[in-house]
Image (cartoon, rainbow, N blue to C red; front, side):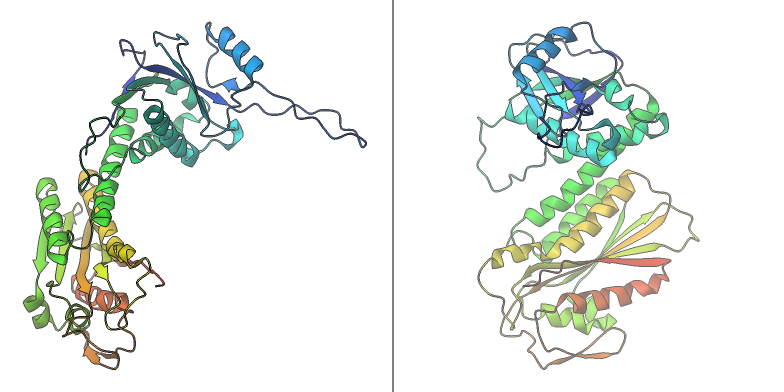
Length: 396
Protein backbone atom coordinates (compact mmCIF):
# COMPACT_ATOMS: atom_id res chain seq x y z
CA UNK A 1 0.00 0.00 0.00
CA UNK A 2 1.02 3.64 -0.46
CA UNK A 3 2.62 5.34 2.53
CA UNK A 4 1.97 9.01 3.24
CA UNK A 5 5.21 10.98 3.26
CA UNK A 6 6.80 12.43 6.40
CA UNK A 7 9.45 15.07 5.71
CA UNK A 8 11.70 16.83 8.21
CA UNK A 9 12.70 20.43 7.58
CA UNK A 10 14.22 23.21 9.70
CA UNK A 11 11.74 25.67 8.15
CA UNK A 12 8.45 25.08 6.34
CA UNK A 13 9.05 24.32 2.66
CA UNK A 14 5.61 23.17 1.56
CA UNK A 15 4.32 25.83 -0.85
CA UNK A 16 0.70 25.99 0.27
CA UNK A 17 -0.22 23.18 2.67
CA UNK A 18 -3.86 22.30 3.23
CA UNK A 19 -3.37 23.19 6.89
CA UNK A 20 -0.80 24.42 9.33
CA UNK A 21 -0.98 22.46 12.59
CA UNK A 22 -0.12 23.85 16.01
CA UNK A 23 0.30 21.64 19.07
CA UNK A 24 -0.86 22.75 22.50
CA UNK A 25 -0.42 21.42 26.01
CA UNK A 26 -3.43 21.26 28.26
CA UNK A 27 -3.29 24.11 30.78
CA UNK A 28 -2.60 23.07 34.35
CA UNK A 29 -5.56 24.24 36.48
CA UNK A 30 -4.89 27.09 38.86
CA UNK A 31 -5.38 26.51 42.55
CA UNK A 32 -8.60 28.20 43.59
CA UNK A 33 -9.66 28.95 47.07
CA UNK A 34 -11.82 26.08 48.21
CA UNK A 35 -15.04 26.64 50.07
CA UNK A 36 -16.61 24.04 52.29
CA UNK A 37 -20.08 25.26 51.42
CA UNK A 38 -19.74 25.78 47.66
CA UNK A 39 -18.56 23.43 44.97
CA UNK A 40 -15.42 24.55 43.19
CA UNK A 41 -16.28 26.03 39.80
CA UNK A 42 -14.50 24.61 36.78
CA UNK A 43 -13.00 27.46 34.79
CA UNK A 44 -11.69 27.34 31.23
CA UNK A 45 -7.91 27.54 31.02
CA UNK A 46 -6.46 28.49 27.63
CA UNK A 47 -4.15 25.71 26.35
CA UNK A 48 -0.44 26.50 26.10
CA UNK A 49 1.39 26.43 22.76
CA UNK A 50 4.21 23.89 22.62
CA UNK A 51 7.39 25.80 21.89
CA UNK A 52 8.10 29.50 21.38
CA UNK A 53 5.20 31.91 21.31
CA UNK A 54 4.45 33.12 17.79
CA UNK A 55 3.58 36.68 16.78
CA UNK A 56 0.43 35.52 14.97
CA UNK A 57 -0.78 33.61 18.03
CA UNK A 58 -2.72 36.45 19.67
CA UNK A 59 -5.75 36.10 17.41
CA UNK A 60 -5.76 32.33 17.92
CA UNK A 61 -5.62 32.67 21.70
CA UNK A 62 -8.48 35.16 21.66
CA UNK A 63 -10.53 32.77 19.56
CA UNK A 64 -9.81 29.87 21.93
CA UNK A 65 -10.63 31.95 24.98
CA UNK A 66 -13.92 33.17 23.51
CA UNK A 67 -15.10 29.91 21.92
CA UNK A 68 -13.70 27.50 24.56
CA UNK A 69 -13.78 24.89 21.77
CA UNK A 70 -10.33 23.42 22.43
CA UNK A 71 -8.60 22.52 25.69
CA UNK A 72 -5.46 20.78 24.46
CA UNK A 73 -6.34 17.36 25.89
CA UNK A 74 -4.37 14.43 24.48
CA UNK A 75 -5.37 13.51 20.90
CA UNK A 76 -7.88 16.37 20.73
CA UNK A 77 -8.06 17.99 17.28
CA UNK A 78 -9.92 21.02 15.97
CA UNK A 79 -9.87 22.52 12.48
CA UNK A 80 -10.31 26.27 12.02
CA UNK A 81 -11.34 26.41 8.37
CA UNK A 82 -10.44 29.46 6.28
CA UNK A 83 -8.23 30.68 9.13
CA UNK A 84 -5.07 31.68 7.26
CA UNK A 85 -1.94 30.88 9.22
CA UNK A 86 1.73 30.43 8.20
CA UNK A 87 0.92 30.29 4.50
CA UNK A 88 -1.87 27.75 4.88
CA UNK A 89 -5.55 28.41 4.27
CA UNK A 90 -6.61 26.39 7.33
CA UNK A 91 -5.33 26.06 10.90
CA UNK A 92 -5.42 22.80 12.81
CA UNK A 93 -5.06 22.51 16.58
CA UNK A 94 -3.61 19.35 18.12
CA UNK A 95 -3.80 18.51 21.81
CA UNK A 96 -0.79 17.01 23.60
CA UNK A 97 -2.38 16.59 27.03
CA UNK A 98 -0.55 17.64 30.17
CA UNK A 99 3.11 18.51 29.71
CA UNK A 100 4.12 16.41 32.72
CA UNK A 101 2.49 13.30 31.21
CA UNK A 102 4.06 13.55 27.75
CA UNK A 103 5.93 10.34 26.92
CA UNK A 104 6.78 8.28 23.84
CA UNK A 105 3.52 6.33 23.96
CA UNK A 106 1.57 9.59 24.11
CA UNK A 107 3.37 10.85 21.02
CA UNK A 108 2.65 7.58 19.23
CA UNK A 109 -1.05 8.08 19.93
CA UNK A 110 -0.85 11.74 18.92
CA UNK A 111 0.82 10.79 15.64
CA UNK A 112 -2.10 8.47 14.92
CA UNK A 113 -4.58 11.20 15.87
CA UNK A 114 -2.90 13.64 13.47
CA UNK A 115 -3.20 11.22 10.55
CA UNK A 116 -6.84 10.48 11.36
CA UNK A 117 -7.47 14.23 11.63
CA UNK A 118 -5.96 14.82 8.18
CA UNK A 119 -8.05 12.03 6.73
CA UNK A 120 -11.30 13.12 8.37
CA UNK A 121 -10.87 16.78 7.37
CA UNK A 122 -9.53 15.86 3.90
CA UNK A 123 -6.23 17.68 4.40
CA UNK A 124 -3.91 16.45 1.66
CA UNK A 125 -0.81 18.15 3.07
CA UNK A 126 -0.02 19.67 6.45
CA UNK A 127 2.83 21.21 8.41
CA UNK A 128 3.39 20.67 12.13
CA UNK A 129 5.81 22.51 14.42
CA UNK A 130 7.61 19.46 15.78
CA UNK A 131 10.43 21.50 17.30
CA UNK A 132 7.95 23.00 19.74
CA UNK A 133 6.79 19.55 20.82
CA UNK A 134 10.29 18.10 21.19
CA UNK A 135 11.47 21.14 23.17
CA UNK A 136 9.50 19.67 26.08
CA UNK A 137 11.64 16.51 25.94
CA UNK A 138 15.22 15.93 27.07
CA UNK A 139 17.58 16.15 24.10
CA UNK A 140 18.75 12.55 24.54
CA UNK A 141 15.15 11.34 24.05
CA UNK A 142 14.11 13.52 21.13
CA UNK A 143 15.02 11.06 18.37
CA UNK A 144 13.04 8.27 20.03
CA UNK A 145 10.04 10.53 20.64
CA UNK A 146 10.10 11.62 17.00
CA UNK A 147 10.24 7.95 16.00
CA UNK A 148 7.21 7.25 18.18
CA UNK A 149 5.21 10.06 16.53
CA UNK A 150 6.10 8.78 13.05
CA UNK A 151 5.19 5.21 14.03
CA UNK A 152 1.77 6.33 15.20
CA UNK A 153 1.18 8.44 12.08
CA UNK A 154 2.09 5.63 9.71
CA UNK A 155 0.39 2.83 11.63
CA UNK A 156 -2.87 4.78 11.60
CA UNK A 157 -2.69 4.87 7.79
CA UNK A 158 -3.05 1.08 7.41
CA UNK A 159 -5.94 -0.10 5.25
CA UNK A 160 -6.56 -3.58 3.82
CA UNK A 161 -8.21 -3.26 0.41
CA UNK A 162 -7.23 -6.41 -1.47
CA UNK A 163 -10.79 -7.67 -1.94
CA UNK A 164 -12.55 -4.30 -2.13
CA UNK A 165 -13.64 -2.43 -5.21
CA UNK A 166 -11.53 0.65 -5.82
CA UNK A 167 -13.31 3.69 -4.41
CA UNK A 168 -12.18 6.62 -6.54
CA UNK A 169 -13.82 9.10 -4.17
CA UNK A 170 -11.91 7.84 -1.12
CA UNK A 171 -9.54 10.40 0.41
CA UNK A 172 -6.03 9.58 1.59
CA UNK A 173 -3.60 12.16 3.06
CA UNK A 174 -0.50 12.69 0.96
CA UNK A 175 2.04 14.05 3.42
CA UNK A 176 2.96 15.92 6.55
CA UNK A 177 5.97 18.17 7.02
CA UNK A 178 7.51 18.26 10.50
CA UNK A 179 8.97 21.72 10.87
CA UNK A 180 11.93 22.77 12.98
CA UNK A 181 13.68 19.41 13.04
CA UNK A 182 16.59 18.25 10.94
CA UNK A 183 19.69 16.10 11.33
CA UNK A 184 20.93 12.60 10.61
CA UNK A 185 19.89 11.22 14.00
CA UNK A 186 16.30 12.41 13.56
CA UNK A 187 16.19 11.21 9.96
CA UNK A 188 17.36 7.78 11.10
CA UNK A 189 14.61 7.77 13.73
CA UNK A 190 11.99 8.55 11.07
CA UNK A 191 13.37 5.89 8.71
CA UNK A 192 13.40 3.34 11.53
CA UNK A 193 9.75 4.13 12.22
CA UNK A 194 8.94 3.49 8.56
CA UNK A 195 10.77 0.16 8.53
CA UNK A 196 8.86 -0.94 11.63
CA UNK A 197 5.54 0.23 10.17
CA UNK A 198 6.18 -1.64 6.91
CA UNK A 199 6.97 -4.81 8.86
CA UNK A 200 3.83 -4.45 10.98
CA UNK A 201 1.77 -3.84 7.84
CA UNK A 202 3.12 -7.07 6.36
CA UNK A 203 2.01 -8.97 9.46
CA UNK A 204 -1.38 -7.23 9.53
CA UNK A 205 -2.04 -7.96 5.87
CA UNK A 206 -1.31 -11.66 6.40
CA UNK A 207 -3.86 -11.72 9.21
CA UNK A 208 -6.47 -9.84 7.20
CA UNK A 209 -6.41 -12.33 4.33
CA UNK A 210 -9.30 -14.80 4.41
CA UNK A 211 -8.58 -18.50 4.94
CA UNK A 212 -9.09 -19.39 1.28
CA UNK A 213 -6.50 -16.79 0.21
CA UNK A 214 -3.92 -17.59 2.90
CA UNK A 215 -3.43 -21.34 2.94
CA UNK A 216 -0.24 -22.78 4.41
CA UNK A 217 1.35 -22.78 0.94
CA UNK A 218 0.29 -19.18 0.32
CA UNK A 219 1.80 -18.20 3.65
CA UNK A 220 5.08 -19.84 2.69
CA UNK A 221 4.98 -18.15 -0.74
CA UNK A 222 4.47 -14.73 0.91
CA UNK A 223 7.44 -15.37 3.22
CA UNK A 224 9.65 -16.51 0.34
CA UNK A 225 8.83 -13.35 -1.67
CA UNK A 226 9.42 -11.10 1.34
CA UNK A 227 12.76 -12.77 2.08
CA UNK A 228 14.02 -12.39 -1.50
CA UNK A 229 13.84 -8.63 -1.40
CA UNK A 230 15.56 -8.29 1.96
CA UNK A 231 18.39 -10.81 1.87
CA UNK A 232 16.83 -13.20 4.36
CA UNK A 233 17.43 -16.90 3.83
CA UNK A 234 14.19 -18.84 3.52
CA UNK A 235 13.68 -22.61 3.53
CA UNK A 236 10.34 -24.41 3.35
CA UNK A 237 9.70 -28.01 4.41
CA UNK A 238 6.64 -29.84 3.09
CA UNK A 239 4.80 -32.87 4.46
CA UNK A 240 7.32 -35.42 3.17
CA UNK A 241 10.27 -33.63 4.76
CA UNK A 242 8.39 -33.33 8.03
CA UNK A 243 7.53 -37.03 7.97
CA UNK A 244 11.26 -37.79 7.72
CA UNK A 245 11.84 -35.58 10.75
CA UNK A 246 9.17 -37.47 12.69
CA UNK A 247 6.96 -34.42 13.27
CA UNK A 248 3.86 -36.46 14.06
CA UNK A 249 2.12 -33.82 16.17
CA UNK A 250 2.17 -31.10 13.51
CA UNK A 251 1.23 -33.57 10.78
CA UNK A 252 -1.57 -34.93 12.95
CA UNK A 253 -3.17 -31.49 13.11
CA UNK A 254 -2.88 -31.09 9.34
CA UNK A 255 -4.19 -34.49 8.28
CA UNK A 256 -7.86 -33.46 8.22
CA UNK A 257 -7.19 -30.73 5.64
CA UNK A 258 -6.68 -30.87 1.88
CA UNK A 259 -4.00 -28.17 2.32
CA UNK A 260 -0.42 -29.40 2.71
CA UNK A 261 1.32 -28.18 5.90
CA UNK A 262 4.51 -26.12 5.68
CA UNK A 263 7.42 -25.48 8.00
CA UNK A 264 8.84 -22.09 7.07
CA UNK A 265 12.34 -21.16 8.23
CA UNK A 266 13.58 -17.57 7.91
CA UNK A 267 17.19 -16.70 8.80
CA UNK A 268 18.68 -13.29 9.48
CA UNK A 269 22.45 -13.48 9.82
CA UNK A 270 23.34 -10.13 11.31
CA UNK A 271 25.87 -11.36 13.87
CA UNK A 272 29.08 -13.31 13.65
CA UNK A 273 29.05 -16.73 12.01
CA UNK A 274 30.00 -18.36 15.31
CA UNK A 275 27.19 -16.66 17.27
CA UNK A 276 24.34 -18.94 18.28
CA UNK A 277 21.03 -17.56 17.01
CA UNK A 278 17.98 -16.34 18.85
CA UNK A 279 14.90 -18.26 17.75
CA UNK A 280 11.32 -17.08 17.39
CA UNK A 281 8.62 -19.65 16.65
CA UNK A 282 5.09 -18.93 15.46
CA UNK A 283 1.83 -20.82 15.39
CA UNK A 284 0.47 -20.60 11.85
CA UNK A 285 -2.96 -22.22 11.85
CA UNK A 286 -4.30 -20.46 8.75
CA UNK A 287 -7.82 -21.55 9.67
CA UNK A 288 -8.88 -23.30 12.85
CA UNK A 289 -12.25 -25.03 12.64
CA UNK A 290 -11.39 -26.99 15.78
CA UNK A 291 -11.15 -30.22 13.79
CA UNK A 292 -13.38 -33.08 14.96
CA UNK A 293 -13.89 -31.08 18.18
CA UNK A 294 -15.69 -28.52 16.03
CA UNK A 295 -15.97 -24.93 17.21
CA UNK A 296 -19.37 -23.21 17.46
CA UNK A 297 -20.46 -21.54 14.21
CA UNK A 298 -20.84 -18.10 15.82
CA UNK A 299 -17.82 -15.95 14.88
CA UNK A 300 -15.93 -18.92 13.48
CA UNK A 301 -14.84 -16.64 10.61
CA UNK A 302 -12.45 -15.01 13.08
CA UNK A 303 -10.45 -18.23 13.26
CA UNK A 304 -8.52 -17.05 10.19
CA UNK A 305 -6.58 -15.05 12.78
CA UNK A 306 -5.17 -18.21 14.39
CA UNK A 307 -2.03 -17.63 12.34
CA UNK A 308 -1.16 -14.27 13.90
CA UNK A 309 1.68 -15.86 15.85
CA UNK A 310 3.19 -16.82 12.50
CA UNK A 311 2.47 -13.36 11.06
CA UNK A 312 4.24 -11.82 14.05
CA UNK A 313 7.31 -13.97 13.42
CA UNK A 314 7.31 -13.02 9.72
CA UNK A 315 6.97 -9.33 10.60
CA UNK A 316 9.79 -9.50 13.15
CA UNK A 317 12.07 -11.20 10.63
CA UNK A 318 11.26 -8.50 8.09
CA UNK A 319 12.10 -5.81 10.64
CA UNK A 320 15.37 -7.55 11.57
CA UNK A 321 16.46 -7.46 7.94
CA UNK A 322 15.31 -3.88 7.28
CA UNK A 323 16.97 -2.55 10.42
CA UNK A 324 20.07 -4.73 9.98
CA UNK A 325 19.87 -5.96 13.58
CA UNK A 326 23.43 -7.06 14.52
CA UNK A 327 22.45 -10.51 15.85
CA UNK A 328 21.57 -13.86 14.31
CA UNK A 329 17.83 -14.53 14.42
CA UNK A 330 15.93 -17.50 13.00
CA UNK A 331 12.17 -17.57 12.64
CA UNK A 332 10.23 -20.84 12.48
CA UNK A 333 6.61 -20.97 11.34
CA UNK A 334 4.45 -24.08 11.56
CA UNK A 335 1.72 -23.50 8.97
CA UNK A 336 -1.28 -25.84 8.97
CA UNK A 337 -5.05 -25.88 8.56
CA UNK A 338 -7.09 -27.59 11.27
CA UNK A 339 -10.12 -29.11 9.53
CA UNK A 340 -12.58 -31.98 10.25
CA UNK A 341 -11.92 -33.90 7.01
CA UNK A 342 -12.33 -37.64 6.59
CA UNK A 343 -8.68 -38.18 7.55
CA UNK A 344 -8.73 -35.86 10.55
CA UNK A 345 -7.30 -37.08 13.82
CA UNK A 346 -9.89 -37.98 16.44
CA UNK A 347 -10.17 -37.49 20.18
CA UNK A 348 -8.46 -40.52 21.69
CA UNK A 349 -5.85 -40.83 18.94
CA UNK A 350 -2.19 -41.05 19.95
CA UNK A 351 0.50 -39.23 17.96
CA UNK A 352 4.28 -39.39 18.28
CA UNK A 353 6.19 -36.13 18.49
CA UNK A 354 9.56 -35.32 16.93
CA UNK A 355 11.11 -35.75 20.37
CA UNK A 356 9.83 -39.32 20.49
CA UNK A 357 7.21 -38.69 23.17
CA UNK A 358 3.67 -39.87 22.55
CA UNK A 359 0.69 -37.59 23.06
CA UNK A 360 -2.96 -38.58 23.47
CA UNK A 361 -5.35 -36.23 21.67
CA UNK A 362 -8.36 -35.56 23.89
CA UNK A 363 -9.51 -32.40 22.11
CA UNK A 364 -8.55 -31.64 18.52
CA UNK A 365 -9.13 -27.93 19.15
CA UNK A 366 -6.01 -27.83 21.33
CA UNK A 367 -3.89 -27.94 18.19
CA UNK A 368 -1.57 -24.99 18.78
CA UNK A 369 0.55 -26.71 21.42
CA UNK A 370 0.93 -29.72 19.12
CA UNK A 371 2.15 -27.60 16.21
CA UNK A 372 4.59 -25.62 18.35
CA UNK A 373 5.89 -28.70 20.17
CA UNK A 374 7.33 -30.08 16.93
CA UNK A 375 8.41 -26.66 15.63
CA UNK A 376 10.32 -25.89 18.84
CA UNK A 377 11.87 -29.36 18.91
CA UNK A 378 13.07 -28.83 15.33
CA UNK A 379 14.46 -25.40 16.27
CA UNK A 380 16.60 -27.03 18.98
CA UNK A 381 18.88 -28.28 16.19
CA UNK A 382 20.38 -24.80 16.01
CA UNK A 383 21.31 -24.84 19.72
CA UNK A 384 19.82 -21.34 20.08
CA UNK A 385 20.61 -18.85 22.81
CA UNK A 386 16.89 -18.48 23.53
CA UNK A 387 13.50 -19.39 22.07
CA UNK A 388 10.42 -17.17 22.12
CA UNK A 389 7.15 -18.56 20.81
CA UNK A 390 4.15 -16.60 19.56
CA UNK A 391 0.67 -18.11 19.51
CA UNK A 392 -2.91 -16.97 19.55
CA UNK A 393 -5.07 -18.27 22.38
CA UNK A 394 -8.59 -17.85 21.08
CA UNK A 395 -10.47 -19.51 23.92
CA UNK A 396 -13.05 -20.72 21.45
